[in-house]
Every structure is written in C-alpha cells, then in structure tokens.
Amino acid sequence: MNEPLVSPRPDIAALEGYHSKQVDVGVRLNTNESPFGPPVGFVDEWLADLRTVPLHRYPDRDARDLRAALAGRLSQPAERVFCANGSNEDLQTLLLTSGGAGRSGAVFAPTYPLHSHIGRLTGTRVVTGERGPDFLVDPDAAVELVVREQPSVVFLCSPNNPTGAVEPPRTIERLLESTEALVVVDEAYGEFSDWSAADLVADDRRLVVSRTYSKVWSMAALRLGFCIAPEWVVDELEKVVLPYHLAVATQRAGVLALEYQDEMDDRVRILVDERERLFAELAQFDGVTAYPSGANFVLIRFASPDIAVAVWEQLVELGVLVRDFARWPRLEGCLRVTVGAPTENAEFLTALRKAVAAVGEDPVG
Ligand SMILES: *Cc1c(COP(=O)(O)O)cnc(C)c1O
Image (cartoon, rainbow, N blue to C red; front, side, top):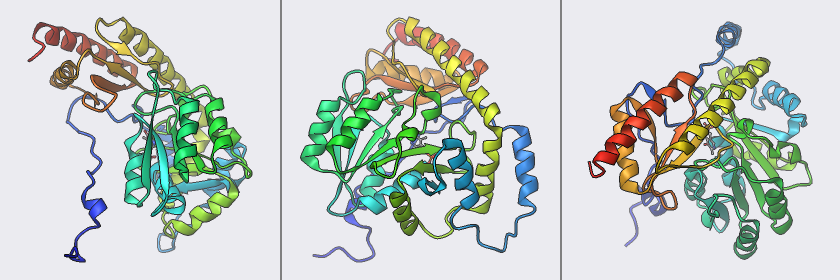
C-alpha cells in the first residue's frame, strides 16, 4: 500500500533530529560559543544604524555591502563570497545545489554530524570514511574513498569538530587532484588555527571554504555564516537560496563587526592561550587523554564510557556543562570542553578534579 500523501518522506521520518543537551548551569562550556559578548561599542553602533533602515523594504538580496566587506578582509573578490543564516545554511545551500537524489557526499568520521544530517535532508547519499587514530584524515584512504564512490561533495572539517585536528594543506591538495567533487572545508574554527584554506580558493579550483560569525565573532544568536567559493559556484548558490533570506539586521551586523577586527584578534589570542593552558593541565590528569586542538575546545577521553558519563554528571552537579560524546562511535569515553573565559576554565578544572576524585572512589556511582 502506498504511504498516505500527508505523511513525511520516509527517509525524513526515519531520521533523528539534531539535539545538544542543554542544562541550566553557571558555566556553559558545551556549544563552542564565544565566552565574550560582542564589544559594547558594536552593539550601540548596530542599534543606532538599525534606526536608519527602511524596515518596509526588502533587504539587499545580494548582500552587496556585506560581501564586499568580507571580500576586503579575505583579499578575495566579492563575487567569491556567499552569505547565509549561519554556516549551516551555507552547507544546506551547497548540498541543495550539488547534492540531492542520485548523488553522494563524503564525510570523514568522527566529525561534525550536521554535514551528514543536512546531506540526508537534501536526499544526498552519505558515504563515510574513517579518520586515523590521531583523528586526521589519511590522504591515501580518502583518495581511495572518493575514487570509489565518486561523491559530488567532499566535506573536510578543519579544525575538526569535535576532535580539534587540523588538516595539512597537502590533504586538501590531494583530494582536489583526485576527485571532480566540490571539496568543502568547514572552517567554523579557522580563526583559532594556524592556517586557513581560504587563500587557496580560486575560480579554477573546486574548493569551498565555509566560515561563521557564530564562534569568534560572538554572534551565535544572530545567525550569520559565509563561504568563499569560485564565482561559478556562488552564482549557482544564489539561484538556490530563498530570495531575501538574509535579514537587513544581520547584514548590517556582519559589516559592522568587521570594524572590530582588532578586538576580535585579541579575543582569539586570549582563547588560544587559554586553550594551550587548559590542554597542558588536562594532559597532567591521571586517567585522561587530551587531544591537541586547533579550535576553541579540547576533546578529552576517559578509560570507559561509564566513567566519562559519571564525570559528566558530577560536573553538572558542580555547575559545569560540557559536551558528552561518551557513547559515540570512535569517541567512546570522550567529553568535549569549550574554552571559556579564564575564570570559567579555572572553575571547570577545579570541578573536574573533584568529579574525577568522586568517580574514582565510586566509579559505578
Ligand atoms: C559551530 C559550527 C558551525 C557553525 O554553524 P552556524 O550555523 O554558523 O552557527 C559550522 N560547522 C561546524 C563544524 C561547527 O562546529
């Protein structure tokens, strides 16, 4: 019997939604946001600017000012910049354009689950390669996968969420040499890392680099992301995305934020210093493995999923929320902690010491 027409597409009905557990605690280090609000001057200027906007008119459909401002920062032409409501909308638009029925997209696990989730939503078959023990993509295995599967899009998350691993330029070059696919490097955490693929984007290279205002730019609530892509890719994305998708308030905030580059660079430096300090402290913990990170978070592993879950629960009791990956494939026993403000990181370390001691005394809880 046929499905009734009012029921959802069976492949959608079979999907799990995307959730990240939220608990109301004092120290929230679970979603990789910036611990700092935007600079006060930015907020005042933005609100004053909004008073001058004709709200009865549609926003600039091509987001010309925003694209030009971003292009200036990136030393790329504005024609190679596409903006959307968070980089997740960039990725969705890319998959609507280049994925879909009869096509596939490749990801390398463990990685950001939204790449496969959006893939499935757009009817794109997802093929999954495995990262090596250090969570880097093995270039030979990756080339073998893309040659065999012929995906139309290849996602490379670098720095990788949730592991922190940064891919070397050579891996991206190898993928570009060995596939006709669009290679999409998700650099949501690119500012925290020591190199970016953004400079490699050119009209004759099938490379797309995706970035966001959600992390460094303290604007997760506003939803603004962008990608740098060959002009011919941007032209197609513009056809696919809904008209006037980007609100004028978001466009103005994006332009204005770029005038606060120095403040943002200072914040990145603070967070990178804090990350290194946190990593050094975590590496000293008995029974904890800390993975080197090029992002604003650190992944740590405990001896077993049960211990990690017990530590996570203790941390919540102590008012600290981190992200629980303890029962994820390849991440068994792992928790991910976002680098917070210095006081938050100190509170986290104190709580972790207590939690590990409590769990050590009574591991089954
Ligand atoms: C946080 C994150 C994003 C950002 O998503 P937005 O939609 O821009 O908020 C994208 N990719 C990865 C890997 C992330 O961790």
